[in-house]
Amino acid sequence: MEDWQKLMKESVRKSENIPKKFKINKKNIDKVTETYPMCSNSYYTSLIKKKGDGIWKQCIADIKEISCEDGVADPLHEETDSPVPGLVHRYPDRVLLLVSNVCAMYCRFCTRKRKVGKQYDTITDKDFKNALNYLKKHKEVRDVIMSGGDPLMLSDSKLEHYISEIRKIKHIEIIRIGTRVPCTLPQRITPKLCKMLKKYHPLYINTHFNTPAEITKESEKACGMLADAGIPLGNQSVLMKGVNSNPKVMKKLVQELIRIRVKPYYIYIPDNVKGTRHLAASVADGLKVIQALRGWTSGMCVPHLIIDIEGGGGKIPILPEYLVKKEGNKYTFRNYEGKEFLYEDIHD
Ligand SMILES: *Cc1c(COP(=O)(O)O)cnc(C)c1O
Ligand code: SF4
Image 1 (cartoon, rainbow, N blue to C red):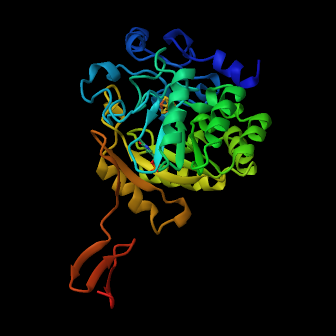
Image 2 (image 1 turned 180 degrees about the vertical axis):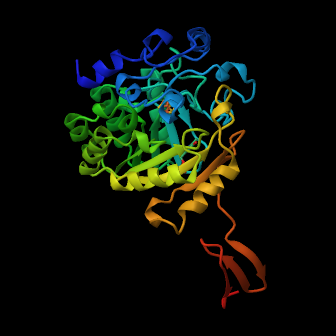
């Protein structure tokens, strides 16, 4: 058994596995896990410093998941935009391929909470064949995003099978893997995995760190190994109350990410998912975060703030207002410090 598999085996799945030093209401947690399974591997659980901190909130079941009725199961209508099982085709030139239903931990805020930890919905060999046929026929698709669950929870050989089959399709220019493993189970990033992945360039990885407390020696090493394998790394965060919806925390996170060679890509306003609303930060929180980043730290550190519109509308970028007014060809802009400047556009 590899190290990462041992860490998975020691996961917190039931209230009685939660380290004894934390006082909990066992009954409440058991009630939640009947509906929404819990799983936090022993590496991620070890990052908890105190009950209720940003790590705890992401991995330990909370009674609010079942006591709050707000939200819907599949707000992004992924099921309706799916031409073949396991494949979501919403945008003109790229598709999501859901190759795994296993994760290194079950994030309490997950957008696919309806699926996480449940046995159904893994892509079968037949589904994968159908997905490949779909991709072969749809020449407009040039970007395949492998997602899940977490693709890096598959065995190296299963993952290589998927990637190499996709690579054979000439019009697929890039392959992306969406994975939280560099953050939640960095031990999974082994030299053998990196050696395999680097055969299939251009390959990109988008990972998912939410708080500076997740940046550890282990995760830094994992990201370094992937970057050394020539894989550009991006990060997508979800903005959550009590976790990271605070300009100071987010600034620290994005600076730390750049230091470990991960480019902040997106910050998401949480989707309206049932069982997660107690954690959701607001659009106003998101705008405050971006305002505190743009200009105040390296542009390399500044991600796009995104809201994924309910009903399958797609990702919409949102920005603080930098345009104060426009009169003819005269624009008044506000800079990061709030000072106003006039700009005359000779092309207008
Ligand atoms: C997010 C998403 C993508 C990828 O979007 P990018 O902006 O290219 O990163 C593709 N398909 C679906 C259905 C998505 O939700
Ligand atoms: S790793 Fe990603 S897909 Fe898995 S539970 Fe967490 S947010 Fe959801």
